Structures are given as C-alpha cells and as structure tokens.
Image (cartoon, rainbow, N blue to C red):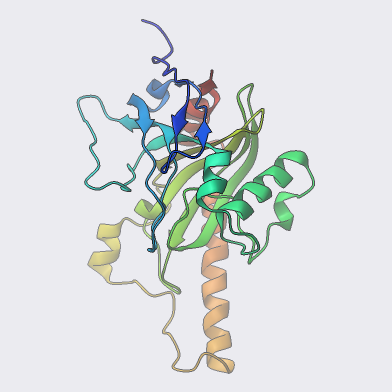
Length: 269
C-alpha cells in the first residue's frame, strides 16, 4: 500500500473572463493520519459578486471524507467541512484586490508573510488584526488557541484552533472549534489552508448546552456603556480567556498531533 495519495498534476487554468492564467501545482497528502480519504481535484473559480460569502478563484482542493462517504457541493461556493485547499496567491489578489481593511484577503496574506519572515510576532497580532484565515468568514475570530508556527519542505505558516461566531457573550460548544493550518508554499506562490473540525472534550457539547439552556455567559445589559456593561465585558473576557486556556491545553494532544502529521504530509509539485 503506497503511503501517498495520488497527486493531481495540472498545467494552467484561466480565471473567469479568461484574461489571466495561473499555474496550479499538483497536490498530494496522507489523509490516513486522521482516518480519512482524499478526493483531490480542481475547483473552478466563482466570479465575485455581492454577498457575505467567499468567492474563490480556481484552485486545487482535497476533500477529506470518511471511508465510503462522498461530498458534493449543493451550490457553487459551498465549502466542505473537512478539506485542504491550495489557492494561487495571484488569483486571490485578482479576486480581492482591496487594501487597508484588517479582514480582507490581502491583509490575511500580508500578515502571514510577516509572521513567516519574523517581521511580526504572534503576540503582536492583536485586534483589529487577527490570525490569518482564508477562506474569509462572515463571522468574528472569537477565540484562538494552540497557536504554533509550522514549517515543512512544502509550506510555511501557522496552525491553531479557532472558534468563529457572529454572536457575543454566548457559550460555545465543542462542535464550534476548528483546527486550521494557514500557510504559503515555500516559493510564496500558493496559499494553503487546511480546515478540520476539532471537538475538545473539555468543552460542552451542543446537546448539553441545549439541555441546560446555559447559553449566555452573563445577562446582556440594556446599555452598551456604563458600569453594568463594563461588568458584562469582564465576564465575557474572562470566559474567553478560559476558553483560550482550554484550547492551548490541546497543543500536543493525540488529535492535534494527527492533524499536524496531515499537514506535514502535504506535497506540492
């Protein structure tokens, strides 16, 4: 049994409109580290339009499924729950050329480059700047933990556990946590992202929260200023600091080590 899943070799692809052509690499990885198989293929880009979703350029994707399962998108921009994707940086910037905002694509790439080069340290990534994360999400980066620089012969970046949410002051179930790797190919031409659900046992399940109805960290005050609101913010900040500690405790856990091995197995050709 060969240890590597088949690589996909491509020459070039034209983005929407046919004006620009980008070369895509071959991708291989070993999904058996997490008990899955990989369906590797080319995903055609979706032209950007208005809306709070990510319109990706043409790229290579490995959908990571359990044996016997097969994932099929229900619409053009739907993303699988568990996957690795390799985006051409030039294609991302052609799709999202904006500058200046801390949550846009260019800032994600620039922040990752700065972290990789050492010009920016992890402890210097503070709001409104966030840890790099693509594809863009219509939610806030509420909690992160187990953050670690990551370098292999193929890629360089960071891996971490994250919770994204549109809500403030709520308790998060373990199902909200995702393991992610965000990196660049060693030549800087490709952005590599890995997304895998990760459920720490230290967090309650969604079913447990539903049963107890203990959703709120603290009652939300009517006014968004004043002593009552300040006390509310302290409770929310303390809860999120505790969550960060729980996520940090997963660094080195068997599940994280297996996912790290998955990332280390990535090869671009």
